[in-house]
Length: 348
Image 1 (cartoon, helix red, strand yellow):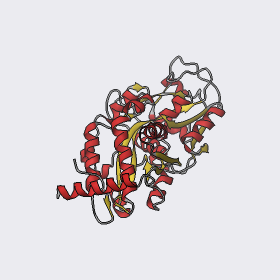
Image 2: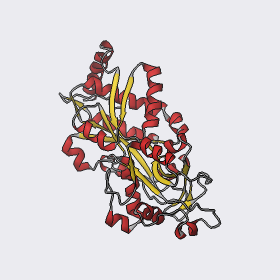
Image 3: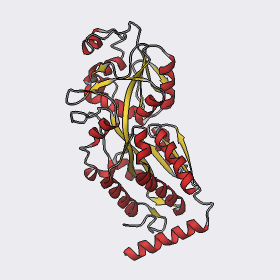
Image 4: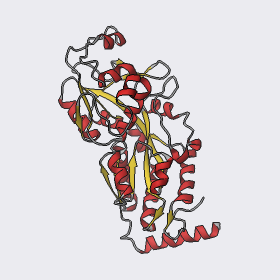
């Protein structure tokens, strides 16, 4: 059986080599959360192999729709699909990278991570209950800070978004009112604020509007030199958004026990854990009409797992542990198959 799997892989690989035009461009769509890392990896991989990645950063909701419709080779979502939904659509998902979602603001005179917010205060700002920066509850959490008197303009995502799913999952865990009135989803009915498309759109609005408060993936906060906050985590400590603190949140994750790799990393215990940490997932069909294209996709992500750690860390993402990579690639060998049932990725 092992020989048959290996022979099937060799046939596909030889076909791929003999037809270099096939698979020279990989098409994907979805989450904006991992886009900075995917863009860097794509550039590096193209230089190494000549293969290009065409990735549409359209939000997790759009990525899920496109992979279900089979219009792309892979989809990407920061909101993991539950096992029942994966089964219904013949999909598998696997985690590719981890990072943090951070609140960001336009507050002249306030430095990044100078101010602290608790989860309950953050939720009440997004509920529209706290409307000014010098509110007594914000002042209580920041004794001695000179808070601006300006109004708070909430900025949220206008599109279906895995970043929103992670953010609202966190708010649902730390605020009973948020859980009852708004809830956790890729798109919610926002009680207040203005909407921007993608992490780019939210970052753009926050930069333009004085007093604005939004949420973006950390790389966007860094690239745009935005004012981020410390948050009070599960253990009651005020922690800053850093790769080390994202890693601390992921340290206790039991990937082996997560059916379909369904894993949520928000509000995890740990003295240094960043409370709005999440993984970004890749979605592929289990049965592949074009085995050569599926092999091209898996080869790209295999290369990223093994060669992309340094580039990801430079953007303050957290790479998947080697033990998880081995688990994921064993899943590729077992679950992603050609139409005739033949293996596409070799068992190792």
